[in-house]
Amino acid sequence: MTTNALMHSSTSSTGAHRGSERRPAAVSSAAAPAGTGLGGNTLAHIVEENCPDLLAAAGVVIEHLDAQAGTWQFSADQGLTWRGIRTDLINRAGNLGLALDRDARLRVLPFGGHRVTGARVAFHTVQRSHGPGNGSYRAYACDEREAGSRTVTLVLSLAAVNGTPPAVHVPRPRNKRAMVQRAAASVGASLSGAMALA
Image (cartoon, rainbow, N blue to C red; front, side, top):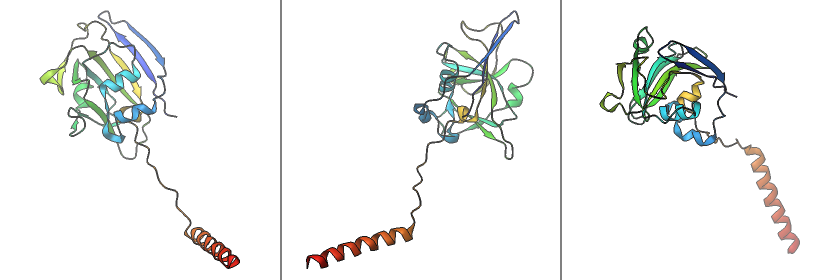
């Protein structure tokens, strides 16, 4: 069972921090079409699944991504093309984030040889679409947030970010010898029945 440890932390102009940890509800099978395998999940899906108490948002500003988890990418065209995210820009000191609309997809490609179970993501929601600025790096002010927008830090499983791969049906291999013996037995039974009638 994969766990998506979740921690909300609110940020205000006074610098006070309040945090609590909880487990989100289990991901239902209906969530699978939102992202398949490494097709990524939309930011709207990630926010709705893990932060149901947040106001409906038109987009987010990503403040931090776990660079140890792998290479982060986003797609603004429903997964047709992917662009690398400069974690070195958004993770350094200062208030520079990646502005993405709610329909943008996010994914992380794990580094080879590393077994990563969770990835830290920090963002705040915005109530207006970024428009032409979708996918751009922009400065944000910690003390000038819109109402209801606060910094949220999530520790997500890779499946929660990348989407759950679709179930693949693999037919059970058949024993050819047993099939031949069954066929021969059925032919023999039908022949003996025909001889008995004659």
